[in-house]
Image (cartoon, rainbow, N blue to C red; front, side, top):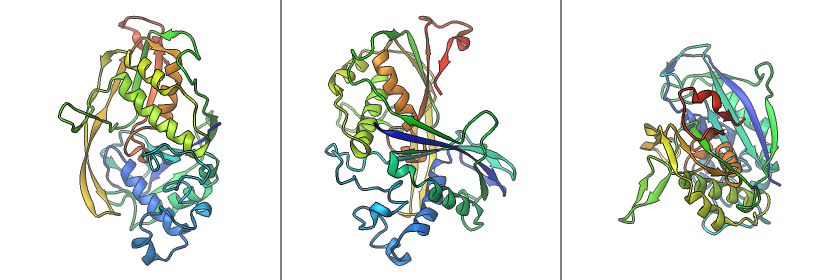
Length: 331
């Protein structure tokens, strides 16, 4: 069964600077560079040339960076065709949205998720790299290289480490019953595309339940195949059931943010979706897939915290003025 280790930390700023609302790409690039530099067995020149990307590296099996941010499929893994690089066993999720201006002492919650035993063993190396990168005045969070310290002491009543086993129903009839209303609240931007009538892959600005569910199937199916064993699930039947779940309420809006890649030296404009939607009725057999899809994130940029969501359910069949009290939120 697939294991998941989720860790909770806090980034406490030690200098001031302007911040982007979604810090995921900046933090991912900053910490990943330092992480690779600390543990990579190739020379600095090779890291910038021959081994700029880790795919095929002969040292992959014993490399903390390779086992988290750029792993090759394990030799024994049953890999879905075309998804060899689809799902990394790692997600770094800073709180969204960040304030537009950061000052010393500002605290930003950070959740880091390690998927599978090999990735979970690298927790110490990862946080060592994060700590060093945050202290470096020549690094820091872009765009103004804002420095920070990493706090691993959790708030009272919570745990810094949480282990889970991912247990999923393999067919629509594995669990009986339906939930009248399910709310999906995105915890950061979502970047999903679908083929339109002209054969182009257009951005999904108002995701249907089936859009989110198919993305969850792709991610979870790939994670199991890569880091546990392939799920013998009835994927066609599950997708068909998801197709029948309607969108009841939509509070989705567009997301835009510039991005700079130090690895490729290219600018880009990220375009996605934020917000929430209410769907229903939802079969219970699909709800558990949605819970885990949100926890482990889906779609492009999931390693940097995109494509995550929280799920709530309600027994109320209609929206009410005091509907906020009728929602039961997942952990």
